[in-house]
Amino acid sequence: MNTPLLVVSDLHTTFETPRGLLPAVRGVSFSVAENQTVGIVGESGSGKTVLARTIMGLQPIRGVKLSGSVLLNGSEIVNRPHDELRHLWGSQVAMIFQDPMTSLNPVRKVGDQIAESLQVGIGLKRKEARARALELLVQVGIPSPEDRFHAYPSHLSGGMRQRVVIASALSCNPKLVLADEPTTGLDVTIQAQILDLLDKMKAERKMSTILVTHDLGVVATRTDHIYVMYAGRIVESLPTADLHSHHRHPYTAALLNSTPRIENKSHTRLTAIAGSPPNLLKPLTGCAFAARCSYASDVCRTQTPELRSDGGSSEFACFNPVGVTV
Amino acid sequence: MDVDNKTVEVTLENVVTKKLGPVFWICAVWIAITVAAAILAPWIGLPSPTVVDYNNFSMNGPMSAAHWFGTNDGGQDIFARVVYGARISLEVSFGSMLLASLIGGTAAIFAAYKGGILDTISNAVMTLILAFPAALAVIAILSFWMPTTPFKLILIVGISGIPLIFRVVRGATLAAARKEYVLAAHVQGAKTPRIIFKEIIPAVWPTAVAFFILGVASVIMLEGALAFLGLSVQSPAFSWGTLLNEARQKIYPPNQNFNMLVWPCLDMVLFIVSLNFIGDRLRSYFDVTEGKL
Image 1 (cartoon, helix red, strand yellow):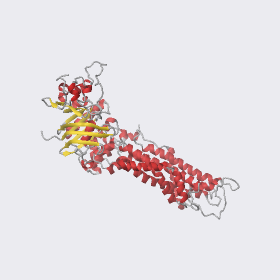
Image 2: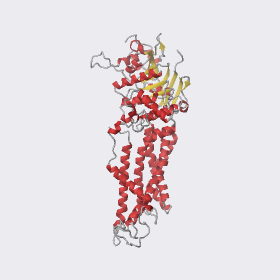
Image 3: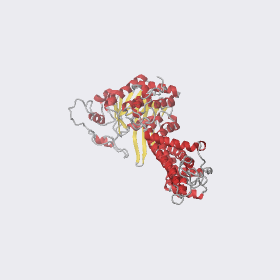
């Protein structure tokens, strides 16, 4: 395998808040190969959105401390001003935002918005850009695209808007697409359509994708590799095929346990994970998950587990890993 | 698949279109007539508003074919004076609001989008100016800077309007700048000027236009109030406000002349009502974020 498209190593993102330093991402390392789809899973507040925005280079200069390195196709992203990143945005890396209701400008026609990203990103003339935008609307499966080209976002349904957002993000043929909870605001049936669309676009364009989500169901079937995040760290890294059968970290096990299953009897109570993620404003000793973990022992509360290999292609950060099966 | 072909229309818009309504058009026509008459006044065959018609002289004359609204205490044609009087009123109201919008609006968009110390300082300055009663300041400055000319009125009233429009536009800009579509444009490589012109201004525009139109209406009234205090333009120049101030002295016998009062007043009131109505309707019409279905 040649060099990966994206290499993240020991990335720290720390916010300077009025109440002290808040380490939102605490030493994350991973890589994404070309044409690979990677899922980042974690609950609210686990730092996955901050991680995605740091990879984009979107963190503000003031009030945020960054360390570590994000290499995209050999270009360093961390701690570079937005002016220097602008040539990477669009053509190298693009982002699909969570909420299609707010990521389109409500007072501009959708076709013009896509065309504009082509004009800005790869310098197409207005007329060419509009023709390409129309092609993109066709590609993302929008019915009667000539009509929709002149529609405002308020004329479109949530699923259609997200298709427009995808068309706009993919307009300049990025090598890497970061999708930050791309289906959270949508109905389940529409979610499947949007994810199918992303799969199709990925296959056609041979691009890499990072799918950030809290929904294990989304990543379980759509990705090649999964990173589970908790309290700003990756606690488990494993090939998607091993998710159900070979996970080792108790947090992954607990997440899987709290997912509803079709084989359960109706009215079965879901197993929730007790407690809530730790307050990162306070310094942590030991494993961040220890307070909520049913396998926690004394060592978990005093020492921080590092990621270690299970001998195969998985890694986990736990002193008391769960067994091979649940 | 020619995108520029304008015959391709959004079907949804064809089915349900926002209507401005007949009242809007009545108001619009009224405003158009008043403004056009004021601009074209010297060329539409009106009697002179200042020269007395000695062939047909009548002091405080009644309404007639020669003098539609009658004549005033100097024998001048009231209809002509109402039409000509609109010139200074409109000049001052549109001029001062344009001045206020250009300075206040530009500063607000720039400050709110850039944020940081620039925004903090300009916002503090505007709050400071707002804390001082603007009407009082206008009166005080005008009384020490006689004689009042339309230019002075535009300058002083315009400057006093800057903090108001700054506040309104700054709020709208802050709300727009926080939206994800601005961030989305940013990560697609758009630079600040493009974001301001393509993302921020279209979002701020309806609010600003509505405020502009309502502002014009209130400046017309402010000019009337200044004229009441004798602080508006000085004779022989006259505006709607000064016409009303002249008429105020003629509401008692023996030289009672209601024509001097009623007609300028009616014109002014109808104009302000129309402006307010149009401002409100335009705001909701241009608000495409409101669903049409």
